[in-house]
Length: 119
Image (cartoon, rainbow, N blue to C red; front, side, top):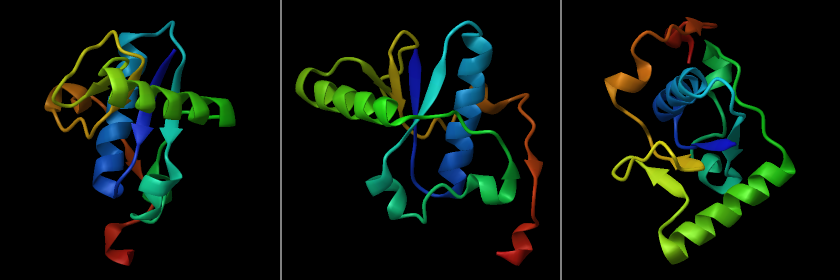
């Protein structure tokens, strides 16, 4: 099981979504969930990627979010379990970052729902 943290604004959510798709391809037999921290997302208007793009975000549950919070606490105390942009390790359980590297989004096509001029 792996968790991808979704946060920040539309652009970062796009990068995080592409990273999620990258992990799906890299680990086809592993379950990959979304971690949606409401406090972080509230600052940027919530999950807005679905309003503009035809994407299917990873599912989450209350237990997945509790597990994500637990992993973040463990990471803060012991620096383990979580992979970040500047400390990337594929064998980690949770991925927190913006993943703005071409290797994570090359070959991934995302369809628009709306034109950006209508924002």
